[in-house]
Length: 288
Image (tube, rainbow, N blue to C red; front, side, top):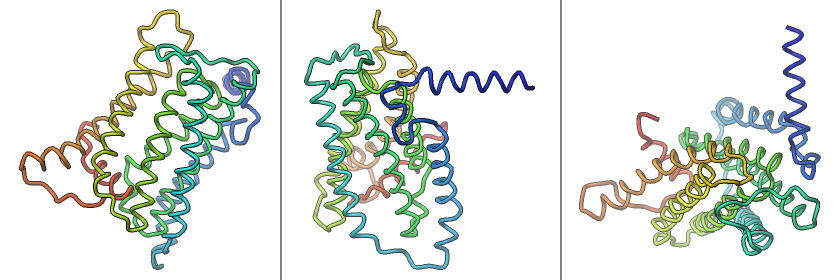
């Protein structure tokens, strides 16, 4: 037993310290996995237990102004990250087919690593989406898809910022932050009662294009030869994209294609972020 514990501790030290990127290893929440895992544990406890009990005999909080400020922040921070990734990498000669992480200590590579740490922090902040649901007494919006997506992104982005902050994976970050800037702009306008009906279909299309491009980009790692990028990136991200494409594709078909062909379906209405997650989650294939 003692030997097994020593082996576990040994491998924990190797993975957490020896394999990590030293440029980011001392940054907030990256030194160890335990703070982030504790945060996710508290998040889960709050949204499924404490939060609903706390709100049981209370009126929903009116958070319109706070959510509007939150949406403005999300638009700006995602646009900033997208710009930095373009300026530091994809407009400066990054290779679409294979772009290994540059672990050197040049000003450019240090800045890329810092930006991916900021991206991870943004995914932690994204957990507020669910907190807002609870405080507004919208427990029905806390779906499997919503929690899976938010919790999973925190874990995935921690791994990226900790071990591979740069190179190939920044293509996903670039696309994701661009799409999120557009999405949160839509949510902001909707929260201000500004008509955004024409946006709905195109935002879903934009999301589907994002998932497709990310999947194709990472699938290349399975067959591109002499590429010094770990194939585990593809093993994690590609199945995630297939899963999300199925959910969003089913939502898009039933919301827009059936409607256009005259098959009876529910009327199209303005869809908020929480409603979008709910509708997609309720339509996921049974085998999943």
